[in-house]
Image 1 (cartoon, helix red, strand yellow):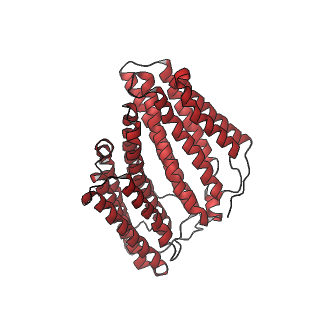
Image 2: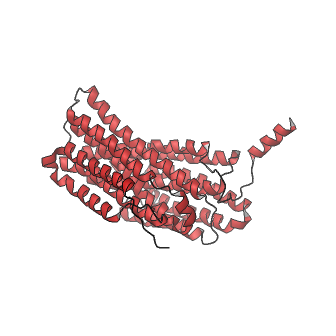
Image 3: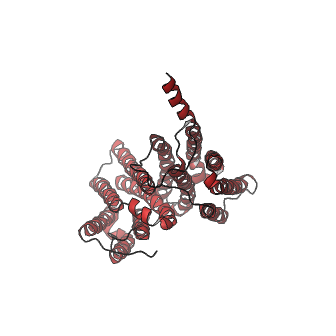
Length: 399
């Protein structure tokens, strides 16, 4: 009984000390996996709104809200992920403050439709505020309990809090949803880790971080599958199943599988361990990777929808809704891999040629049709994947 009570006491409160960066067999915790599930809802909401905007012929108006909402999703997820890699105690207080952040994600997800259709970012801001309150409390706790890195923790808490005041003022006082105010606050957000870590580096675990990012890739790929499935389901219910729909759906599956293969072909844990100073390039570059994969889900949904029945968007627009995310993904994947990996990098000329062809293909959509364009894009990515597996290039990134 005494041993049980002692065990319970440990679980109630564990001193928050920096975890070792070479801790063996470090893997994502069940709490982190549960935390990720709330982001499934947020990513799904953002993807669905982008798909509706593209299908209704309002692609240009839908892109900026999508990028803004997705930044809030990605940045909140990333901040918690890197904090947890350094300070995951998994005690009661830690779990409760994590739950607060999860609640914020759900509020943010609920506000996505209003942001996308009416440029009303009130609930997005409220959800983001709730997430930041939970994270700031965790940084304050780590500052109190880990004297060696107290300056870093308190810098994080102060920086996040100050920028959060800016987000609230942007909506509550200035009533501004200008992209310029958004970009200004984004720059400040991105500078907080750089400024905070000048006091002392946090003890993030490279293989744990690589696994966490890989899991988020799985999440956004899963959203792409779900988005395409929704369109197929609608077509089946409306008895609009056609050969074009079947081909686009199958090509979407093959395309996503090839993208998954390319991403996980080069494990990032070792590269991050060897080049910790390149972590900002690698980590920040994933905003575009995650966003491109989420946008690809919207593009595939619209492509399947277009194959089933008439939509307002032109065929060229629909084709670009697939081509642009794929091109962005390929370029940024090459960039982040080159930043940390000394070998087995996809050939740069092959990437450039593939991306150029992908971006030119939609111009031929009036002749190829959307189905033919999506099929050709898929074929190009499959060929790039096969070439990378068969003839991996070698590159040495700058230090």
